[in-house]
Length: 226
Ligand code: AMP
Picture 1 (cartoon, helix red, strand yellow):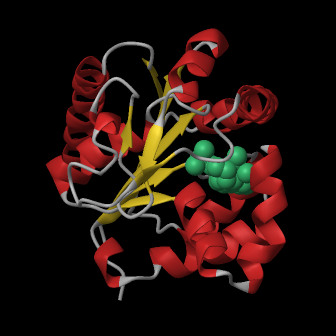
Picture 2 (picture 1 turned 180 degrees about the horizontal axis):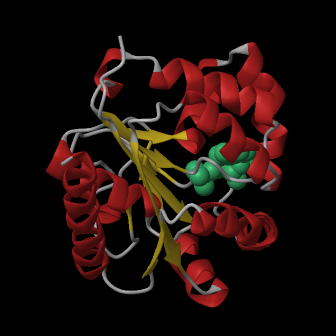
């Protein structure tokens, strides 16, 4: 059975905006799981499933996977027991169709907060061109940090470069993001659940701004309930 007061944090942002890093920080504060659709898809590809085979080329080109496939993966993941108190969505929804599909998964009593991390393309290209990732826990590293040792500091897994972290693909992913996001922002702004944070600052500063939003959300939830 679903918990009556889940906290659902949606992180919106282009490639390299720090959604994954911030999702892990929020997870460490609140204990609710990070659900990254990119990671779910890469796991399907790594395991060689039918779904993985059908989406591989799309990820490599930086396009968007169809809403039915994504909706199915999300619905299964949200139904798992660790989501009973809420979850953090990293990379979902990406367009209005997905936002409407997400609404169907929500309860009236859920507390939804949407946080958009704003970025600029040139910084993103520089950031991602040097990024290394852990395929097991999803932690990402700038090339100047732990990538030197080539293993993840958290779980010891060998780090890899993502096949879609190359300039042409990054530009294509960013263009897709810029096309799909304004309607999504409007969709959530009208509901009064949309917040923006400057994602170009150091991760700790971005996290501080997110903490403030989450504290206000918790306060609003308590006052609505009383
Ligand atoms: P990310 O890890 O969020 O950067 O996503 C990597 C890639 O996975 C994207 O460039 C898309 O090809 C695909 N992807 C991730 N999330 C979604 C989504 N919600 N809808 C469609 N495609 C997605």
